[in-house]
Image 1 (cartoon, each protein chain N blue to C red):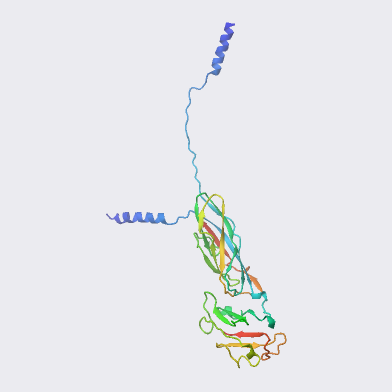
Image 2 (spheres, rainbow over the protein chains, first blue to last red):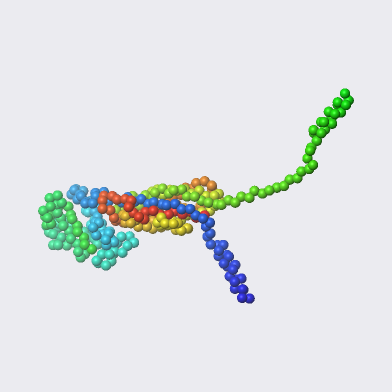
Length: 155
Length: 158
């Protein structure tokens, strides 16, 4: 009678083994993944400021975004100006402590008359805008409405 | 003349007669043991072309391969991240972040498996890269040629 439990269990074990996938063998091959990553517009490491008549476009920032797990997008003259979002599936490591979107509008008329510090727009804590001429820059504060923008983001 | 004819008839009778005393026969079996098998062809490279921060997901090109299996033999495919020793059966999809350009992607298969028909059957490894990824590239464009995790393993189980 001591073997009775085994008798009961054995068919179940056999059934289990019979139902389990039983691959007799396998073959394998390597799969190589090639990636070509291009910059938007393909302008290179140092983005060339667009001509004032071609300001609409997508700019981007690499300097801090990858270290903080965020993407930064700047869309010039087309509505969205700044957005900061966590990289897909990653945690945003910014000093503000969480993933968020930072948006602000742009009013070019104000650029010609004052600095970003005097005319804050949007909201955030550490964001600075400078307007300067890359080719003939006289330094920060040399504002002209149609000159390229330099956007500095700290997050 | 009569004697000559008689001798000729006797010789002919002897020549036509069988020298065998009798015969018998037997049968035998031919036993064949067929070991089923599948073989994978080389897999063409899976290629992504991605623009940093692009909104839409990118689909890979390439990845084609063929498998030849014994007639009626069912088989399945599996994927395994990395190029280490295959540990069947593998997964239906794998997700990897390339360690050179810092872009995440997923690999899958055009079919989970099939049934062998004795000739090469064509399939492909599919790839998808989500949009809105920045990636890492200190130039106008980069490749992942230096990545140490760009090679993965395709397994056929049978």
